[in-house]
Length: 457
Image (cartoon, rainbow, N blue to C red; front, side, top):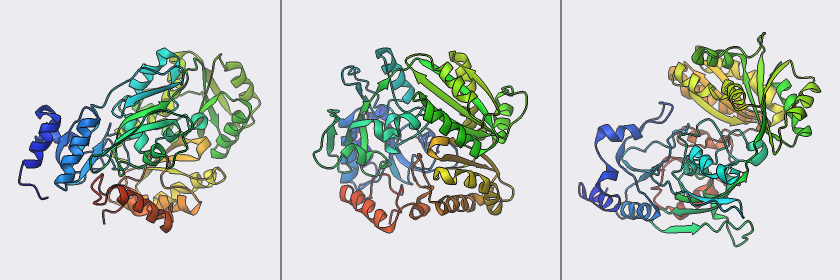
């Protein structure tokens, strides 16, 4: 660090004002641990800019003093990418909360990167629109973080990942220069797609400040079914059967008997069926009119169904979803988990689910696995409790199992710092070299989110 003690802080204070430069260790500490409690870092200070101009000022000052910058949105990430590298400036996007009027003709909206998913939903729904991505952390996750990690969630089956919803971005590069493409043109074939490049880059190419987002129609006719099946193969049969018959299918979520038991113990919820079953699937259909009859007809014709309960009212739908969405909080209440988000080809999904218990036991005999996921994408969330000192061995064993089936070591949470040593399991040497070249072409010193995605060296 080339600056005399305190001079960089003085420059940052001039950019964001004294109230939004945080240096008190007791205050900064709340930014230094991730949501799971597993990953930690040490920030030199925290800056909270309010707009693109202030973000540019922060990065210009940091570049001048050769200081590293870590970027944090809602801090709901699960791979250690949202906590600071030791000694970096932590740039929080929490105050970038602008919400522009909905463009009802184009079905688009421009928002600040610090806007939470729930705030976006509340903003666009009165205009008859919705956002195509949704998941349980909606109250705290931010749009900038979702784009930076190309978040997935529960609606990928119908609308795709977050990258598919992004039509334009405004971002600040490592040297403080600003790029802004917020026109939202659905056809713009003028070279590299900047929005797609920044989506999934995990803050290593620039700091997202504003986003132009594609919206989808607000569908008020909804039906949710909780369906009991025998196993993972039965879940695949059910989802394929319903998907092929109902264009209204929006979500298909899988969980298992041990996860249900954990949720019931943590929340006090009742058993959804008179008898226990090995596996369960939550299905949601949405349309302009209520899709209940079509969903019931499809379930009745599917041989994989062992039992089912369906709801169309808001409270009933919320209750059925709670069996799945309460998994994360129930797991965290039981301890600090090793959380591994992976994806495998659908043909391999039953085999991987069957092999996971023995794979994890081989790495950590005392560990306990809770599994859930998004069936249609072959996306599994592997949660391992009580791994203790075996956390890295568990990670290695699970990721190698996934790779042996031609899967991805990260389906929707990114690489962060947690999975950096295993990137080569899913990306070739040539691909990694290409990504490094892009990163260091924009940030030659590697100052943005150092240690995320790539080894700092």
